[in-house]
Image 1 (cartoon, rainbow, N blue to C red):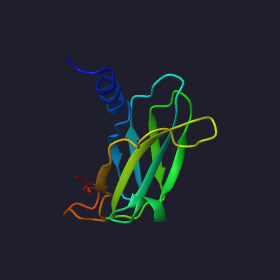
Image 2 (image 1 turned 90 degrees about the horizontal axis):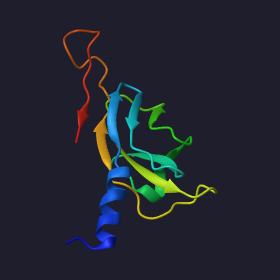
Image 3 (image 1 turned 135 degrees about the vertical axis):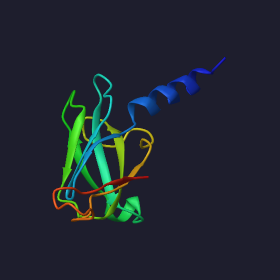
Length: 120
């Protein structure tokens, strides 16, 4: 039988997990399952920079489940994570699981209208 804290942590990990929806050369769309009444931020950085030094973030509107991150560099590895925040946008608890991916390369396939993305 699982302890109450273990069940709570399992539920939080489901709600704090980002899923890649679309990855282009300069933008990424991720989605997650929001918990009612919670506020979120999606944080990102280039890999392997530290979270403390070079983190960017985007606040997520209430009940929004998809977020587009724009202005990224083509062919660059990024690390993203989801943060639960209070009304003042201060972090509550530990960040969600990291999603590491590469934005699309410019013309990395034989056809000019095709490109690629690598998810780690």
